Length: 193
Ligand code: IMP
Image 1 (tube, protein in one colour):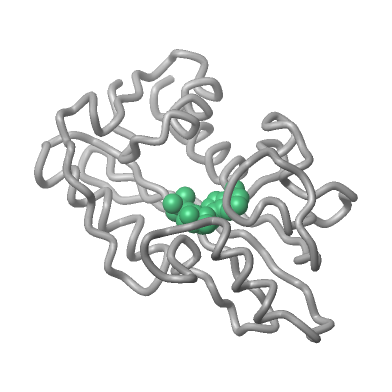
Image 2 (image 1 turned 90 degrees about the vertical axis):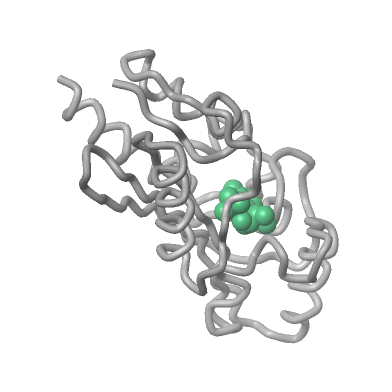
C-alpha cells in the first residue's frame, strides 16, 4: 500500500513513518511532484483537511491524507482555532502569534485551551476522519525552546512542563497530532493486514 501524506513537513512525515514501522509506503507532496501550495480556504479544521486531501487526490490520482491543527482557547470562544498559523497576520510568525495571544489573554483568569488535529483520509474511494485533542492551559510567559508554534506557552493537563520543554518523543505521546496519527496508523494497519 502507498499513500501520500499531503505535507512537506519532514518532521510530520517522519512521525507517521516511524509509527507505521515500514509496512505502508508514505509519500510526501514532493515525492508525487506536487510543488504548488494546497488550497486551505475553509473555516473549520475538517474543511481544510479534506480540502487539501481532495486536491491531491483529484490532481495527482493518489490515495492520501492531510492534517489540520488549531489551538482553541476557551476564553476567546475557540480562537485562534483554524486561523492559528496566521493569527497575527501574514507573513506567518510563531513569535508574533504567541505575543498576540498573550496580549489577548492579559487579565483573563480562564486559561483553558486545547490543541485539536483533524486528519482527513481518502482511501480507495472512501473518506475517513481522525481527531486528536490535547487539553491544557496557556501560561503567561514563554518557557522552553523545543517544538514550534504555541508550544512555549502551552502546558498539557497533568504536566508541569510546557510542550516546548518536553522532548519530541514525550510530546508525541500526549499531543493532539500524536493521538490523531495513532488512530490513523491503527486504521491503516488493520486495512493492510
Ligand atoms: P498545521 O495545521 O499543522 O499547519 O498547524 C497550524 C498552526 O497551528 C501552526 O502554524 C501552529 O501555529 C499551530 N500548531 C499546530 N500544531 C502545533 C503544535 O504541536 N504545537 C504548537 N503549535 C502548533
